[in-house]
Length: 248
Image (cartoon, rainbow, N blue to C red; front, side):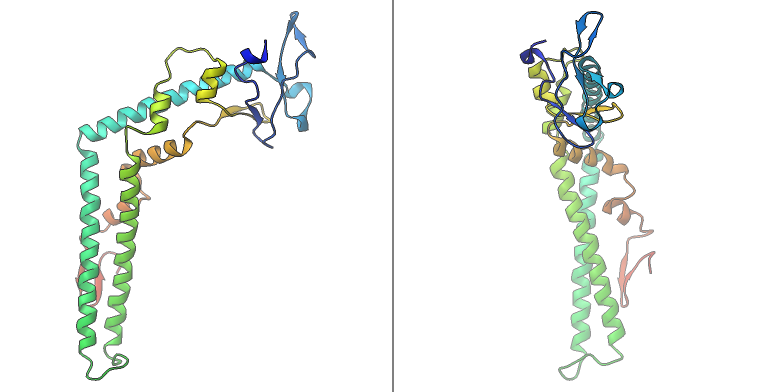
């Protein structure tokens, strides 16, 4: 096969050391047919050889998996939007952020009132210090909640899009396709062959993929800031001693 016709020409790298792998042509023939083998130079022995056909078969199978993942992601986005769950989650974020900002504002007001009890400028009287420390700690806790929620909400709103570059690219792969140089250039420009003969590839727009899959997992994630706030047994209240919730 001419290099111009080889779909994986100059696209295969060692998955362990990262070096580029070149085919070893004209060394082995099977049934009178020239066979191209790939192997990392650091582990070059016949038992480690992988043929071009084997790499292409593995690559094609993984591209079909990537296509299916993209199609399922697209369907889930549509389902979350149609069911109203996306809007519900977005509204919940805003509601919790506003709540914690109000907690901060109220706490600041209580701290100010506490300071006004001083008869003379200077350090707080000893009997007022515990209440001040508690309110200050509550402020820090509320600020941490609000900041985490705002950061997570922004990332969610930015990443949850049907216009995602990875989604658009890989959901467009046809169910039936042939590996050609142009096709591989578009969908799998870097292919990795590991010492155990495992083959994988690096998707295009991988950052966009990771962001989208993170967004799709967020509504059910037990480790999100949103989930942490939802675990509170009741809406926290601000008493004279600070935030009162299940952690107190």
